[in-house]
Length: 80
Image (tube, rainbow, N blue to C red; front, side, top):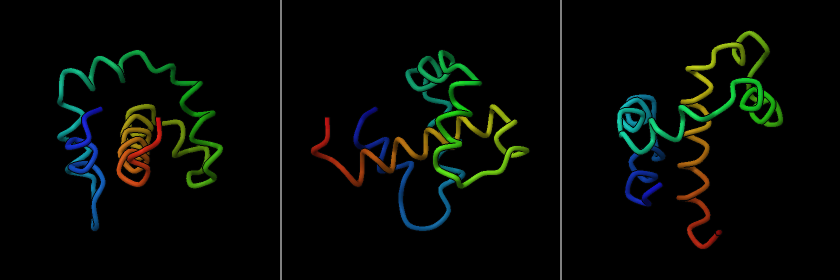
C-alpha cells in the first residue's frame, strides 16, 4: 500500500469513510479479494477487539484489516 493511501485511511477521528474510499482502489480490491474469510477472522480474533457476531461479517472484516494495515504503515514507517 502506498504511504499516502495509508495516511488517508488512518488519521484522527472516524476513518470509516476513508477506508470505504480506499476499498474502491483497484489495487486494494485485488488484494482484498484474495483474503480467505476464515484466516481473516482468525487474524482479527487475536486483537480481542471484536466479538464473534462481528467477526462473522467478512465485508466488515476486510475494512478492519485494511484500517489495521493503514495504522501499521503510518505508525511504523520504517518497518519492512
